[in-house]
Amino acid sequence: MRKTNSEVISCPICCDYGKQCVQTLDDKTHDPYIIFRCKNCKHKWFANSNRMPYVEAKKIVERKTPNFIKWTYKTLPKNLMVPEKLSILDVGCWDGSLLKCMPNSWELHGIEPNKNAASRAKLKNIKVFESYIENTKLESNYYDIVFMMNILEHFKNPISAIKIVSKCMKKNALFFAVTGNSESFFARLFKGKWYYFNYAEHLNYFFT
Ligand SMILES: [Zn+2]
Image 1 (cartoon, rainbow, N blue to C red):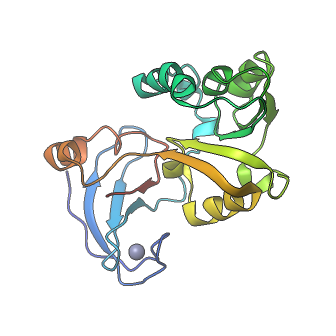
Image 2: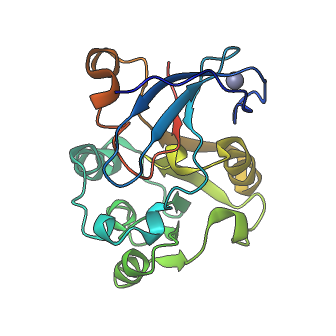
């Protein structure tokens, strides 16, 4: 780990200025890997604009489904009262494994810019928008449930992505999001070695 001087850069969450670099990690593929922390809201983010988006990272294509998603697949349908028809949107649906667990009678839509993953999702009879959310034409006031599972950390501007999603949700729609907690016990324990910091495609680090 190397130290760097403080730098001034805009926070993607609160847009405050006067930010401080808190750590620099050595990343084999993207050196240097500098994480910033907002002095105002304490949000952490990675600010190197040259970083490779995950949709272009071929090594990510064969990534195994994380355990928490497998858990979601098994648990979610059983815990919901199942109406005959619902419209669902999974932002960053990858190969459609989450949507595949939903009842066939539901309208299942996914957004997935990675072509390989999107083609796998289509094989599961899911309607897939093969684009980034910023370039996807979504109907306003349409979806009953929206998922953003481990996807918020990928956006350069997560606030903008959430605003787009909120427009396509019906009134009283459900929104599920999962992301890493950069102030969690393990994040504080492992610091620069925390697994979320070491994913090449993660740009934002939220906390509770
Ligand atoms: Zn901030």
